[in-house]
Amino acid sequence: MSEASELLVLLDKDEEVLFAQLGTRLLGETRGMGTDDEIAGKFGRSWFDQRKEELRKLICGHPTVLALLESPNSDRAVQASVLVDILASIEGYAAHAVLIAVLVGKVGLLTFCSTESSKE
Image (cartoon, rainbow, N blue to C red; front, side):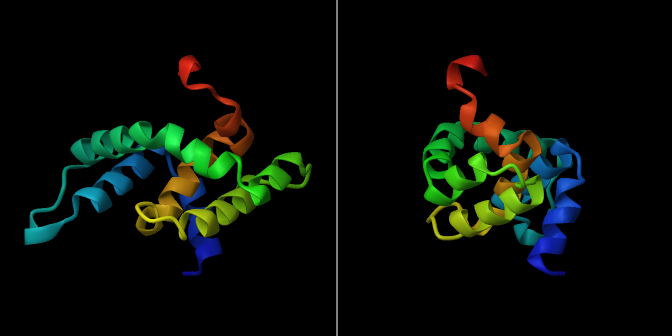
């Protein structure tokens, strides 16, 4: 599956499913034990929430993102694709770039970049 196809499929998934996928990847499935979706979902959400401000700083000031925010033709799939490219080059986020980009895309780039931490 191409990255664009994967993004479209993931953008249609429920946020809780995405957090569970992120948590599962972060926790790993070593030793064949697997990971409970609820636990993985909580872990994925917590991990994402703890890094939200850092992600805003990395994403929202990027020149390409600033151009996207001003473009009337920018949709969530385009935004998510750009975010994958940005995140893939940042240590600590590269391995999970697609899921992070989709989670940001679910709320919308404009909303994500304009939300202040005090409002959450």
